[in-house]
Length: 323
Image 1 (tube, rainbow, N blue to C red):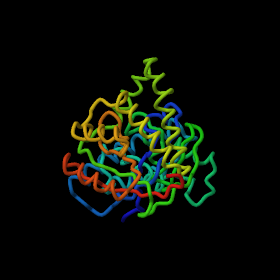
Image 2 (cartoon, rainbow, N blue to C red; image 1 turned 135 degrees about the horizontal axis):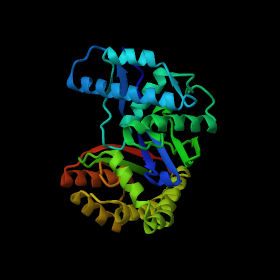
Image 3 (spheres, helix red, strand yellow; image 1 turned 90 degrees about the vertical axis):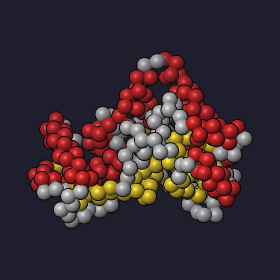
């Protein structure tokens, strides 16, 4: 038995800032996916996944007991399937910042939640917030604290605009096209990290008044502008604001920086050819880059890949209206 596929996501803008009500933009990323399976697989990966599911089931039992009004699951069916060896067969790598636990949460909710909100319904803002709250509580098992956005994006498989913690909506994004004049690249740094410790560091930093001031006057300000520029198809403004966001990210939020990548990107940023932001602050895994001219950018990334030995995972080309 194999369940439906649930895809990874990319948070184009809004990492950590959304904790303090910045805007955010999350899109599905179908390069990776996962599905629940019950096929007698006895590999080490399947056994480990099954054991993790067992611990997750115990957490969901407790969650349902403590918050019965939030969500109800068919726990008997879930326990039976896990006891029979069910596991989450996933190509989504952990520590990349692309929603590995979010896809699992979405898969469990889809199969075992009772009276669930489906993707076929009219997804009002209230329903989206309800789903986000449910998913946040479910995913907290993995991260200690979760916004619920990763499972929401994986479950709905549509772009999600975050205006604030209590104001989210489905949205459209600029048309993807190989002839588009704007490009977003993903580059694999080869460094694995865990989300929970990094969130804890961020929350600890928030106790400092100087950090909170920087977050509000620089990071959140530039993040909000980038989201508005991207959705408005304004490549010129997006490029300039991403440069500012990239600068504040490097100076204020990074503590572990792959040197070969950093040196190359710092040089490129000075020449305004190439901009970087990370999907993963503090422990870098994936880099997201925005570039104006896709053909030339491909050559730049080929050289970057050779120098740093970091593979390009994929590229998105967008048609922007103001270039």
